[in-house]
Image (cartoon, rainbow, N blue to C red; front, top):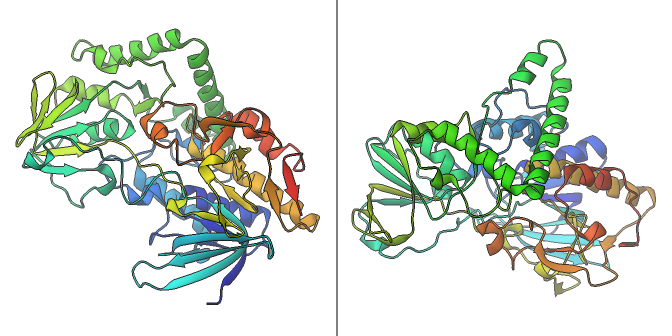
Length: 483
């Protein structure tokens, strides 16, 4: 089978893949490239998830691309608007014609003899196979399994007479009007579902095993809205972006340095919103702020919904499902017509596809990452991970800028391969997404590459220092081998 040949292949047409393609268009317009996308539409996460109220959990001034301003005033935007933003960006940079939709990557193999990757793919609808060859591969597949969310088995599930739904597989046109709904979970999905569904339900309950820190933020960026009357939109966007990056970093650093003070601040804000209607214990985690990701809600919508009585929160453990709902270990029973298991994601790298170099499978979870972009021992390939303690796209942008710098250096010096090599054992037990103790990250311990102890091998999750390293530091160093 003849292979389609490109300078660069991008795997995934979500926000990371479209970002990578736009950076190539901007910085290396002479490079040929294609994007292999399993789905029939772009957007990734924002095309897959369709549950009520789906929105970003990061502010849009930092979640948007650095090169294309987000011009709406909403701080947290809904899923359809984000998908449209990604589509409009792809259209503006003429990326759409480079996408091969319905193309599931099945194998990735690198040959040192040819200095090329061979990618085999399958069209799952037609069964047609295809082969691609590329000098460089950029994996933009995100970090979770698109086929199946994390779904623990609960005792007695078969006894339940109603519907059980996972947000990743939300049924189209689900009618929950006048129904009793229980949402299992306390993360970003659960705190979004409760206020979005409450107006139509008879009652909705958030059932959590343990509390999460929840912070109310303004729904609109009124400062940027005012500044746009006097300044160009691109200026205002960059100003808001810098402001929010600094604010995010300050809060994160304060949470690590003064956890008790930040805890009091967060709980005080929640208490003011809830009043005496809801016990603050349901929002008082045992861990410190930013040991797990904070949840944000616009204008305190979750708190207002709970205060209104249309929704309630229960902190308890499940003993068993019953025919009418859920029996808790406290003895209480929650009646339900619909149970939503907002229990999280299954972490998966590159859609579960194995990587081979010169006929040998690479145990990627045992390798460390270089600048959190290249994987040790894997030539001519980058993997794009966003931030876990800030907006995902902040890291995507600067990682893609680094990749473009690397490719320019290779072209200028007539180099065919680059590979990161650790001169000593620098591997730690933390993954590239380490730093948080969230359940999905703990479950990913054996699926994601490691991070190192220091220098270019350590993941900082700090946009300011990462920007200096990825955008300004010399390309050539002792850890990279060129040929």
